[in-house]
Amino acid sequence: MNFSLHIIKQIKTFIKFPIQFLKILFDDIKKDFFYDHKKKYNKVLVIGVQKSGTTLIEWILSEMGYVNQVTSPLRIFYEKNLKYVHDLSSKMLSYLPDRKFTFLKRHSEATFDNLKIIKDSNLKIILSIRNLKQIMISRYIHIISDKNFPQYYKFKDLDYVEGFRLSLIKNHIEGEVPIKIFNEWLINWEKAIKEKKIDCLILNYNDFKINEKNYIDKILNFLEIEDCKSSDILKKHKERIEKMKNKTLEDNLKKNLHSQTYNSLSDNIKFKLNKEISDEEINNLIKKYELPGV
Image (tube, rainbow, N blue to C red; front, top):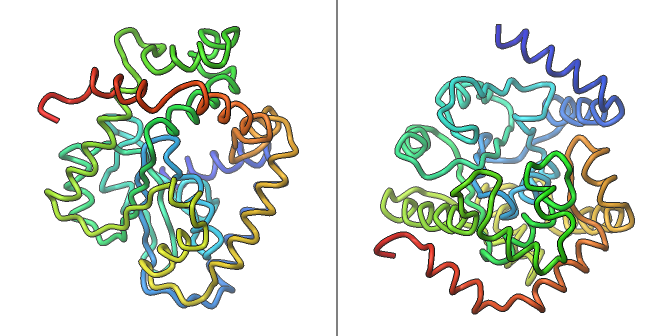
């Protein structure tokens, strides 16, 4: 049954994104059957809150020869019977093949069940974190770029600074405070890593901005990879960014199988918000909504 559902899903993806689907299929066939892997670990789990840099890690792992369990036609991704949409499950991980190189990216929270599944698994864990202000700015840009977001119409006609301030404390669900939710996600995971003594690589997206090559080298060293170089991956990354920069936000978001809310306009919005919204203002909001006892 799960295989049948997988085939149906892939057919739908092919109909909507035929060129990109075929490119992913051929790339993944090459990785599975024609790539001379020199890697010690074949199963990688990437955990990170939305907008923390997980998409970058996804892309880097793909360039290193790993296949994406969620999007690959050659992998089954089981996401049924979850308490929360981003949760993990033992059955989900059971579809990671033993003799192929695969990664899975999730935005899972540090719940008891998710932590137990991770502790019981034989996976290499990468945790992606980021400065909370930058997470919230990236989230806001995504919201105002995508009409499918329920919050889009709440912010679309507002000035960027006014809209961003509102996006920090108002969500489409009454009573939810976004900056509180994202802050608690980061606090709970960093606390869980220490208390549960989970062996993982913690990557801060802000460090990528400071030293891109060192960021990639950390992944190579953690996974003990000998079949690729950080300099080659970084060169491809810069070429990819240049292409996205010259496209419209709509093109990057809507016309790609892997949507990206990035172009030169998003850089301008980030610059304006970083200039107009002080770190002190963000820190005051964090203190106002932080977890009791933190």
